[in-house]
Image (cartoon, rainbow, N blue to C red; front, side, top):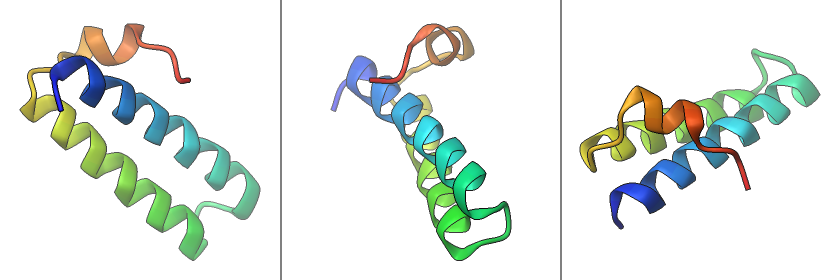
Length: 61
């Protein structure tokens, strides 16, 4: 997975986590799982070279 794909995956994971947290509550098991997936995705994107600007400027799909 390249930087662009990893960045898109991270942004999508964060958007999903936001939706899950809003739907189930911040302390729900679903929210905790989605938040961990988003963290892992962002870590991966950064390992691929994604910057704060890349993450900020990419829109979820």
